[in-house]
Image 1 (cartoon, rainbow, N blue to C red):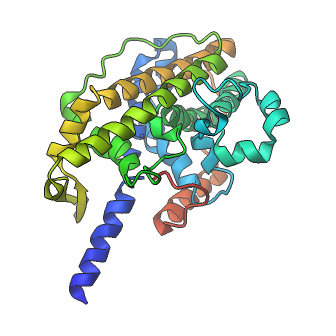
Image 2 (image 1 turned 180 degrees about the horizontal axis):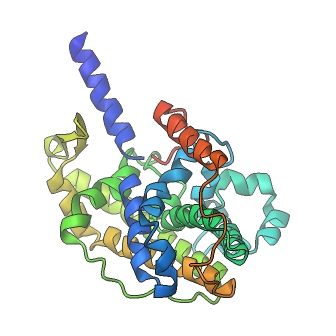
Length: 322
Protein backbone atom coordinates (compact mmCIF):
# COMPACT_ATOMS: atom_id res chain seq x y z
CA UNK A 1 0.00 0.00 0.00
CA UNK A 2 2.78 2.44 0.87
CA UNK A 3 4.50 1.80 -2.46
CA UNK A 4 1.26 2.29 -4.38
CA UNK A 5 0.55 5.51 -2.49
CA UNK A 6 4.02 6.86 -3.27
CA UNK A 7 3.63 6.09 -6.97
CA UNK A 8 0.23 7.80 -7.01
CA UNK A 9 1.66 10.90 -5.34
CA UNK A 10 4.55 11.04 -7.78
CA UNK A 11 2.23 10.77 -10.75
CA UNK A 12 -0.06 13.42 -9.29
CA UNK A 13 2.80 15.85 -8.73
CA UNK A 14 4.10 15.25 -12.26
CA UNK A 15 0.73 16.00 -13.85
CA UNK A 16 -0.08 19.09 -11.85
CA UNK A 17 3.43 20.56 -11.63
CA UNK A 18 2.90 21.95 -15.11
CA UNK A 19 -0.10 24.08 -15.34
CA UNK A 20 3.66 29.25 -21.02
CA UNK A 21 3.42 27.83 -16.97
CA UNK A 22 3.37 29.94 -13.82
CA UNK A 23 7.11 30.61 -13.96
CA UNK A 24 7.09 31.82 -17.56
CA UNK A 25 3.98 34.00 -17.21
CA UNK A 26 5.45 35.74 -14.18
CA UNK A 27 8.78 36.21 -15.95
CA UNK A 28 7.14 37.63 -19.08
CA UNK A 29 5.19 40.30 -17.19
CA UNK A 30 8.21 41.13 -15.02
CA UNK A 31 10.60 41.62 -17.92
CA UNK A 32 8.02 43.50 -20.02
CA UNK A 33 8.16 46.35 -17.50
CA UNK A 34 11.75 47.16 -18.48
CA UNK A 35 10.75 47.79 -22.11
CA UNK A 36 8.50 50.71 -21.15
CA UNK A 37 9.34 54.44 -21.45
CA UNK A 38 10.19 56.37 -18.24
CA UNK A 39 6.72 57.94 -18.16
CA UNK A 40 5.21 54.48 -17.67
CA UNK A 41 8.00 53.04 -15.55
CA UNK A 42 7.00 55.35 -12.68
CA UNK A 43 3.88 53.20 -12.25
CA UNK A 44 4.86 49.82 -13.66
CA UNK A 45 8.26 49.41 -12.01
CA UNK A 46 6.85 50.49 -8.65
CA UNK A 47 4.28 47.70 -8.97
CA UNK A 48 6.43 45.17 -10.80
CA UNK A 49 5.94 42.49 -8.16
CA UNK A 50 2.16 42.80 -8.42
CA UNK A 51 2.29 42.54 -12.22
CA UNK A 52 4.48 39.46 -11.96
CA UNK A 53 2.62 37.66 -9.19
CA UNK A 54 -0.80 38.33 -10.68
CA UNK A 55 0.25 37.29 -14.18
CA UNK A 56 -1.16 33.87 -13.27
CA UNK A 57 -4.57 35.07 -12.06
CA UNK A 58 -6.27 34.06 -15.33
CA UNK A 59 -5.04 30.47 -14.87
CA UNK A 60 -6.34 30.48 -11.31
CA UNK A 61 -9.63 31.89 -12.58
CA UNK A 62 -10.19 28.76 -14.66
CA UNK A 63 -10.89 26.96 -11.41
CA UNK A 64 -13.88 29.22 -10.78
CA UNK A 65 -15.41 30.29 -14.09
CA UNK A 66 -16.72 28.12 -16.90
CA UNK A 67 -16.20 30.93 -19.40
CA UNK A 68 -12.52 31.46 -18.54
CA UNK A 69 -10.81 28.56 -20.31
CA UNK A 70 -11.68 29.57 -23.92
CA UNK A 71 -9.98 32.92 -23.36
CA UNK A 72 -6.60 31.13 -23.23
CA UNK A 73 -6.55 29.30 -26.56
CA UNK A 74 -7.98 28.83 -30.03
CA UNK A 75 -8.15 25.46 -31.80
CA UNK A 76 -7.61 27.20 -35.08
CA UNK A 77 -7.06 23.96 -37.02
CA UNK A 78 -10.78 23.32 -36.54
CA UNK A 79 -11.34 25.99 -39.19
CA UNK A 80 -9.50 24.26 -42.04
CA UNK A 81 -5.93 24.74 -43.21
CA UNK A 82 -3.34 27.48 -42.76
CA UNK A 83 -3.84 30.45 -42.91
CA UNK A 84 -7.43 29.58 -41.91
CA UNK A 85 -9.06 32.14 -44.17
CA UNK A 86 -12.49 30.64 -43.51
CA UNK A 87 -12.40 32.14 -40.01
CA UNK A 88 -13.32 35.86 -40.00
CA UNK A 89 -10.89 37.94 -37.96
CA UNK A 90 -13.63 40.34 -36.81
CA UNK A 91 -15.62 39.04 -33.84
CA UNK A 92 -19.09 39.98 -35.12
CA UNK A 93 -18.38 38.45 -38.52
CA UNK A 94 -17.12 35.26 -36.86
CA UNK A 95 -20.27 35.04 -34.70
CA UNK A 96 -22.46 35.49 -37.77
CA UNK A 97 -20.69 32.66 -39.55
CA UNK A 98 -20.08 30.17 -36.72
CA UNK A 99 -22.25 31.30 -33.72
CA UNK A 100 -20.86 32.42 -30.39
CA UNK A 101 -21.31 28.98 -28.81
CA UNK A 102 -19.13 27.41 -31.47
CA UNK A 103 -16.44 30.07 -31.11
CA UNK A 104 -16.39 29.58 -27.34
CA UNK A 105 -16.05 25.84 -27.81
CA UNK A 106 -12.89 26.18 -29.87
CA UNK A 107 -11.36 29.18 -28.08
CA UNK A 108 -11.34 32.96 -28.42
CA UNK A 109 -7.87 34.15 -27.33
CA UNK A 110 -7.18 36.60 -30.22
CA UNK A 111 -10.53 38.32 -29.76
CA UNK A 112 -10.30 38.32 -25.98
CA UNK A 113 -6.93 40.07 -26.07
CA UNK A 114 -8.52 42.86 -28.11
CA UNK A 115 -11.33 43.14 -25.56
CA UNK A 116 -8.79 43.39 -22.76
CA UNK A 117 -6.85 46.00 -24.73
CA UNK A 118 -9.96 48.16 -25.01
CA UNK A 119 -10.61 47.80 -21.27
CA UNK A 120 -7.02 48.73 -20.42
CA UNK A 121 -7.20 51.79 -22.66
CA UNK A 122 -10.39 52.89 -20.87
CA UNK A 123 -8.74 52.35 -17.47
CA UNK A 124 -5.91 54.68 -18.54
CA UNK A 125 -8.45 57.27 -19.70
CA UNK A 126 -10.19 57.06 -16.31
CA UNK A 127 -6.80 57.24 -14.53
CA UNK A 128 -7.87 54.27 -12.40
CA UNK A 129 -4.63 52.86 -11.01
CA UNK A 130 -6.00 49.68 -9.47
CA UNK A 131 -7.83 48.76 -12.65
CA UNK A 132 -4.80 49.58 -14.83
CA UNK A 133 -2.64 47.22 -12.80
CA UNK A 134 -5.19 44.38 -12.73
CA UNK A 135 -5.88 44.59 -16.45
CA UNK A 136 -2.17 44.91 -17.28
CA UNK A 137 -1.40 41.72 -15.35
CA UNK A 138 -4.29 39.87 -16.99
CA UNK A 139 -3.68 40.91 -20.59
CA UNK A 140 -0.04 39.89 -20.21
CA UNK A 141 -1.19 36.36 -19.49
CA UNK A 142 -3.46 36.07 -22.52
CA UNK A 143 -0.82 37.56 -24.84
CA UNK A 144 1.69 35.05 -23.54
CA UNK A 145 -0.74 32.19 -24.18
CA UNK A 146 -1.26 33.30 -27.79
CA UNK A 147 2.48 32.80 -28.37
CA UNK A 148 2.39 29.13 -27.31
CA UNK A 149 1.94 26.79 -30.32
CA UNK A 150 -0.06 24.25 -28.33
CA UNK A 151 -2.54 26.94 -27.32
CA UNK A 152 -3.34 27.27 -31.03
CA UNK A 153 -3.84 23.60 -31.80
CA UNK A 154 -6.61 21.09 -31.03
CA UNK A 155 -3.95 18.48 -30.16
CA UNK A 156 -3.05 20.79 -27.30
CA UNK A 157 -1.46 18.20 -25.04
CA UNK A 158 -0.52 15.56 -27.57
CA UNK A 159 -3.62 13.63 -26.57
CA UNK A 160 -4.26 12.57 -30.17
CA UNK A 161 -0.71 11.37 -30.78
CA UNK A 162 0.21 9.64 -27.52
CA UNK A 163 2.27 12.61 -26.29
CA UNK A 164 0.36 13.51 -23.13
CA UNK A 165 2.36 16.01 -21.09
CA UNK A 166 4.01 17.79 -24.01
CA UNK A 167 2.11 21.00 -23.24
CA UNK A 168 3.73 21.43 -19.84
CA UNK A 169 7.02 20.14 -21.22
CA UNK A 170 7.22 22.95 -23.80
CA UNK A 171 5.81 25.85 -21.82
CA UNK A 172 6.93 25.04 -18.27
CA UNK A 173 9.73 22.52 -17.95
CA UNK A 174 12.02 23.97 -20.63
CA UNK A 175 11.73 27.63 -19.51
CA UNK A 176 12.21 26.70 -15.87
CA UNK A 177 15.34 24.72 -16.74
CA UNK A 178 16.99 27.07 -19.23
CA UNK A 179 15.68 30.65 -18.94
CA UNK A 180 17.70 31.90 -15.99
CA UNK A 181 21.06 30.47 -17.03
CA UNK A 182 21.09 30.32 -20.81
CA UNK A 183 18.54 32.64 -22.43
CA UNK A 184 18.96 36.26 -23.48
CA UNK A 185 16.17 38.66 -22.59
CA UNK A 186 17.79 41.88 -23.75
CA UNK A 187 15.04 42.93 -26.13
CA UNK A 188 14.99 46.72 -26.51
CA UNK A 189 11.96 48.95 -26.14
CA UNK A 190 8.22 48.56 -26.52
CA UNK A 191 6.69 49.79 -29.77
CA UNK A 192 3.38 51.35 -30.68
CA UNK A 193 1.01 48.86 -32.35
CA UNK A 194 -1.02 50.52 -35.09
CA UNK A 195 -3.43 47.60 -35.47
CA UNK A 196 -3.58 45.42 -32.32
CA UNK A 197 -6.03 43.01 -33.96
CA UNK A 198 -3.79 42.35 -36.94
CA UNK A 199 -0.77 42.11 -34.65
CA UNK A 200 -2.21 39.42 -32.41
CA UNK A 201 -3.67 37.44 -35.30
CA UNK A 202 -0.21 37.41 -36.88
CA UNK A 203 1.25 36.01 -33.66
CA UNK A 204 -1.52 33.41 -33.45
CA UNK A 205 -0.78 32.27 -37.00
CA UNK A 206 2.93 32.02 -36.14
CA UNK A 207 2.01 29.79 -33.20
CA UNK A 208 -0.26 27.68 -35.37
CA UNK A 209 2.48 27.21 -37.96
CA UNK A 210 4.87 26.01 -35.24
CA UNK A 211 2.48 23.53 -33.59
CA UNK A 212 3.27 20.66 -35.94
CA UNK A 213 7.01 21.13 -35.37
CA UNK A 214 6.51 21.09 -31.60
CA UNK A 215 4.68 17.77 -31.81
CA UNK A 216 6.64 16.06 -34.59
CA UNK A 217 10.11 16.83 -33.20
CA UNK A 218 9.20 15.47 -29.77
CA UNK A 219 7.67 12.37 -31.30
CA UNK A 220 10.85 11.74 -33.29
CA UNK A 221 13.10 12.35 -30.28
CA UNK A 222 10.99 10.04 -28.17
CA UNK A 223 11.55 7.18 -30.63
CA UNK A 224 15.31 7.83 -30.72
CA UNK A 225 15.84 8.30 -26.98
CA UNK A 226 16.34 5.45 -24.50
CA UNK A 227 13.02 4.94 -22.75
CA UNK A 228 14.60 4.80 -19.29
CA UNK A 229 16.35 8.16 -19.81
CA UNK A 230 13.38 10.29 -20.87
CA UNK A 231 12.23 11.01 -17.30
CA UNK A 232 13.98 11.61 -14.00
CA UNK A 233 12.95 12.20 -10.39
CA UNK A 234 13.86 15.62 -8.99
CA UNK A 235 13.09 17.70 -5.92
CA UNK A 236 10.58 20.45 -6.63
CA UNK A 237 9.34 22.69 -3.83
CA UNK A 238 10.27 20.06 -1.29
CA UNK A 239 8.50 17.27 -3.19
CA UNK A 240 10.02 14.55 -5.35
CA UNK A 241 8.45 14.85 -8.78
CA UNK A 242 8.77 12.91 -12.02
CA UNK A 243 10.07 15.32 -14.65
CA UNK A 244 11.34 15.21 -18.19
CA UNK A 245 15.08 14.54 -17.76
CA UNK A 246 17.40 17.49 -18.25
CA UNK A 247 19.32 15.83 -21.09
CA UNK A 248 16.06 15.10 -22.91
CA UNK A 249 14.94 18.72 -22.43
CA UNK A 250 18.18 20.12 -23.79
CA UNK A 251 18.14 17.83 -26.80
CA UNK A 252 14.54 18.77 -27.59
CA UNK A 253 15.38 22.46 -27.22
CA UNK A 254 18.25 22.04 -29.69
CA UNK A 255 15.97 20.27 -32.16
CA UNK A 256 13.56 23.21 -31.92
CA UNK A 257 16.44 25.65 -32.49
CA UNK A 258 15.56 27.56 -29.30
CA UNK A 259 11.92 28.08 -30.33
CA UNK A 260 10.74 28.38 -26.73
CA UNK A 261 13.19 31.19 -26.02
CA UNK A 262 12.17 33.04 -29.19
CA UNK A 263 8.47 32.81 -28.40
CA UNK A 264 9.08 33.96 -24.84
CA UNK A 265 11.07 36.97 -26.09
CA UNK A 266 8.28 37.78 -28.55
CA UNK A 267 5.75 37.52 -25.71
CA UNK A 268 7.69 39.99 -23.57
CA UNK A 269 7.88 42.51 -26.41
CA UNK A 270 4.19 42.05 -27.24
CA UNK A 271 3.04 42.51 -23.63
CA UNK A 272 5.07 45.70 -23.20
CA UNK A 273 3.87 47.02 -26.56
CA UNK A 274 0.20 46.37 -25.78
CA UNK A 275 0.58 48.20 -22.45
CA UNK A 276 2.33 51.08 -24.20
CA UNK A 277 -0.24 51.24 -27.00
CA UNK A 278 -3.14 51.40 -24.53
CA UNK A 279 -1.44 54.27 -22.68
CA UNK A 280 -0.76 56.21 -25.90
CA UNK A 281 -4.31 55.67 -27.18
CA UNK A 282 -5.63 56.99 -23.88
CA UNK A 283 -3.78 60.25 -24.42
CA UNK A 284 -0.64 59.42 -22.43
CA UNK A 285 -2.04 60.39 -19.01
CA UNK A 286 0.39 61.35 -16.26
CA UNK A 287 0.80 58.11 -14.31
CA UNK A 288 1.93 60.03 -11.24
CA UNK A 289 -1.52 61.59 -11.03
CA UNK A 290 -3.86 58.60 -10.81
CA UNK A 291 -6.93 57.91 -8.68
CA UNK A 292 -8.06 54.72 -6.93
CA UNK A 293 -4.49 53.92 -5.93
CA UNK A 294 -5.38 51.20 -3.44
CA UNK A 295 -7.08 47.90 -4.11
CA UNK A 296 -10.52 47.68 -2.59
CA UNK A 297 -11.73 45.13 -0.09
CA UNK A 298 -13.55 43.47 -3.01
CA UNK A 299 -10.28 43.25 -4.95
CA UNK A 300 -8.45 41.65 -2.03
CA UNK A 301 -11.30 39.21 -1.52
CA UNK A 302 -11.16 38.30 -5.21
CA UNK A 303 -7.41 37.65 -5.03
CA UNK A 304 -7.83 35.49 -1.95
CA UNK A 305 -10.72 33.54 -3.47
CA UNK A 306 -8.67 32.83 -6.59
CA UNK A 307 -5.84 31.46 -4.47
CA UNK A 308 -8.17 29.29 -2.41
CA UNK A 309 -9.92 27.84 -5.44
CA UNK A 310 -6.61 27.19 -7.18
CA UNK A 311 -5.12 25.45 -4.14
CA UNK A 312 -8.25 23.36 -3.79
CA UNK A 313 -7.91 22.16 -7.46
CA UNK A 314 -7.71 20.20 -9.67
CA UNK A 315 -11.37 20.72 -10.62
CA UNK A 316 -10.49 22.99 -13.54
CA UNK A 317 -13.55 24.28 -15.35
CA UNK A 318 -13.22 23.94 -19.10
CA UNK A 319 -10.17 22.62 -20.90
CA UNK A 320 -7.13 22.07 -18.72
CA UNK A 321 -3.96 23.88 -19.72
CA UNK A 322 -2.18 20.54 -19.51
